[in-house]
Structures are given as structure tokens and as C-alpha cells.
Length: 439
Image (cartoon, rainbow, N blue to C red; front, side, top):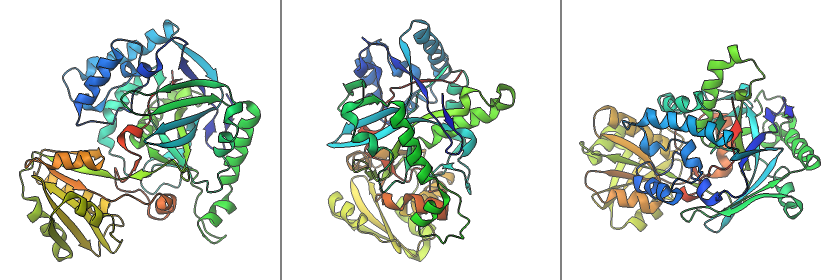
């Protein structure tokens, strides 16, 4: 397997299901989706119906905290070994080009292994590979338990490059019809279509050369209008989805590397790389829902933000959403839905750069004071409105982050607040398909 240390990448060997396995049943959505909608995962179980599936190789977060959690983790490790022993997975060496179609748009990516030695999720990082948002270390523990005893990793991590000239991935899109097809199938539960293609060595070298161009310090500084004398470290890869999964891989690697040695496969993590400028990539907001609310949210907001906060009743959800989406940095807006009633919350001269940051600071304080039992992060206006129908919930509707600002914001301001944005709607999230040996 070729490695390119200056880029922090390795061309991976991946494992794919052998011919004859039903790929629609094999491939399931990222484990951190539909966490407050267990009926989704129940339907996945019904569709899989005991067939070979990545469902048996992951721990859906909807099941975290249940009495059988440890048994589920042990079963995951045993199933990985069984699938390998039974020959259900076959190795493929080389770059894979991926296309994912959902909701009428198509995203394009490549499968790469990233060097965890060149990745950092802590604030203030100047690493080549960086997290984009705050990592909640407490959330890593169950994921670490899964990865520590695993023979395989199955990524739902999406990592972004800022390639406005479209030199890296789009060079493969133009040649897609000449590439050998590895898989091509419909995903379950209306989540679109997934295709993967083998990339020959000559085209792989072109991809690497294009990445090397993006990583040149002089080109990096010019892209963001920094002076040539600036000391900004190159940010080549920014984690778009799966921050906690990549942080889990880093935590496990740091734990084992002194005894495993620097050539151990766990030094790398398999990800899908996509271009920030892909026309099919849309940034969506991640909304918040408080459950079993005990405090008065409408009173708590001005008490927390002071005179800079105003709360206005709005007659309809559509009007509220429209007002939220026309906010400005100097006058942030988000919506509150409780008991079916809508309110527009405005914050003047906010301390946080983003509305999601201002809201998250309030929610952390509100929860710490016992104002609600728990919080969840949900996708889609329809879902947040539905949760907001209950008087015991408080649902918060947020605006989307402008994707063109992502890299420069991370470079200049550091990590975004956790769950600041989503790469598409819930059904567009990455489905597990490829596996890679890490033991």
C-alpha cells in the first residue's frame, strides 16, 4: 500500500462484499443517525432479516445506554471475524471513486486512508488534517470500545478538501465511464443510489499530484488571501461528517502505538474525501431538541442573554423559518417551537460568531441547571417541527452555515461549535459499504 507522508494519506486496501450478497441489505446508514427515532432502526432490522449486513458490524447510537450494550459490542467483534473466516469479504487494492445520488443531487468522492499522526481534534490545532467542530470526549467511550476489539473499520467519515478548481475528484468524474465498476445499487429506505469504481494507478497518481498542488504552502496562502509571509499552517483535509468517529480512531491509535509500532494498520483511518465545491454537496443545519423540559425556556433566554435578546411570537412555522434564514452576523436568529407555538429569537451583537454557537452556549447552561432531561440533534425542518408539537419538548430551528466559509473560519477562528452543520439531509448521510482491516 502506497503512502504519501507529506499529504498524510495512504492508498488503502479495502474489503468489499463478495458477489451474490444483497448490497441493499448489506449497506446501512451511519450509526449516529436517527438517534431519537428507534423506529427507523427497527425497520432496518426488519429489512436486513438476518442477511450479511453492516448492521451487524456497527452499534447504532439509538441503542446506546441499553442493558445489552456490551453484548452488542461483543457480537460486533465476533461477526467481523465470522465474515472474514467465511470469505464474505474480499480485498481490493487501490483507490475507489464513489458517487452517491439522493434527493435529486449527486456527490462525488474518493476512498483514502488518512494518517492519524497528522490529524488533531483538539482546539488550536495547526495539523494538516483537522476537525471542524468541537469534539465531546465523553461521547468517544462506546465508540472506543467497539474499535478496540475490532478486526475491521467501517467508515461513515466524510472529509472535505477546498478545491475550487476541481482538480482532484472531478478528474475522475470525467473518466467514470472508463473505470471498472465495483458496486452499483439502490440504498434502503429511500436513501438513493451508491456506485463505486476502481481507479487505475495512472489516474491515482494524477489525483495525488492534484492533492500535492492543494498542499503547497504558497498556493494555500494565496487561496485565502493571506500575505506570503503569513505563518498559517496548511489545512488540507477538514472533517465534514464523522468528527467523533475519526477522533475515536485517533484515541485508539494513541493508546496502542507505543506497543504496536508505527507501521500498524490502525495508524490510518479509512474515509471518503469530497470536494467542498461539489455542486451536489449542500450544507444543512442541525437543529436541537430538549426533552422533558422542566424550566421556562422563553424566560430563560433573555435571562441568559440579557437585553440583547428579544423573543417574538410568530404565527406560522414557515414564517419563522423564513425569518431565521434572513439573519445577519450582527443580528443572529433562531426559532423556538414548543407546544406547537413558534417564536423568533434574536440576539444583537452576539459573542459567538455563529447562531449555533450562541444557542449551544445557552443550551449547555440550561441543561446544567436542570432545565431539561436531555438534548438531541436532529435533521430536517419537518422533524424539528414534529418534536416541537409536544409541550414537554423545546425544539430549536437553526439557519444553515454557508459552506464556502468553512475552511477560512476553521483556519482563523478554530473549531466550530459541535453539530454546527450537516452535509445534507439525514437520508443523504454516508452508508457503510467498504471495510478495512485495522488488526
